[in-house]
Length: 101
Image (cartoon, rainbow, N blue to C red; front, side, top):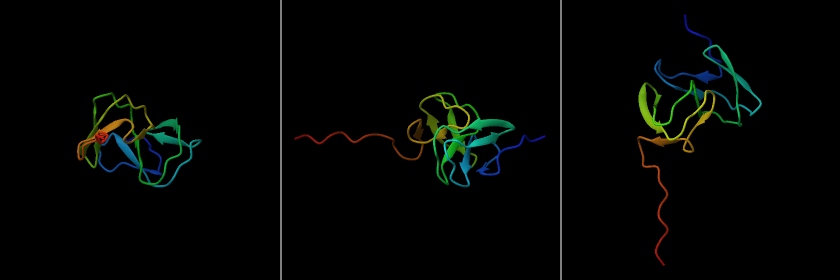
């Protein structure tokens, strides 16, 4: 039996470990992830990703059933998954060096 997930969240593939917000949510919102209540820690807007479960540092992040990146630190259930805690598999994630004078 599948455990209940908040209808404001979309799991795009059955093996995804991230969920996509179908609406904007405030930091005081509580969402249901696979039957467990999780309180968000920051406001998030439509289309952003949150962790569907705990994701370990170095673990592959899966969306649409495909690897999209790697966690650069541990990510807890319900936490925002974005450039602050993942490295993309599609584009390099880096800071351009400062230009020489």
